[in-house]
Length: 133
Image (cartoon, rainbow, N blue to C red; front, side, top):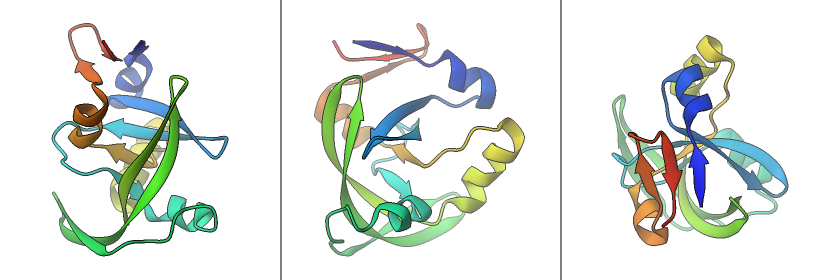
C-alpha cells in the first residue's frame, strides 16, 4: 500500500494524509519527530459524544512550551484499514490556523512515530510517499 504525499507537500510543505473519522474526512500531519499523536481540541469537542471517555491528562512538549490534554482513543480509517489510536487533545489552533490561512489546508492533528512503529508504515521522502510494506 502506497499513498502519495505530493499534494500536502506542495501546498504546505508538510506531509499530510486524509483519514476518515466517523465517515468525515480529517487531515493529519505525519510527524515522525513526535512520540505522541495529537488531535485538535475542536475535533474532540465536535465528536466527543461518539468517542471513548477520556483517560488521564497528559502533557505534550511543543515548540510553544508544554500543553496538557486528555488522552482518548480515536477510531480512524486510512487506505481501507481501520485503526484505534490514542491521541492527546490539545489546543493546536495557534499553529494549525496559521497553516490554514497561508495554504487553505485545514490540519486537524498529527500522527506521531508510535503510529508508524505500531503499524509498520514508512515515510519515504525520496519517493514522496507513505507506504506499508
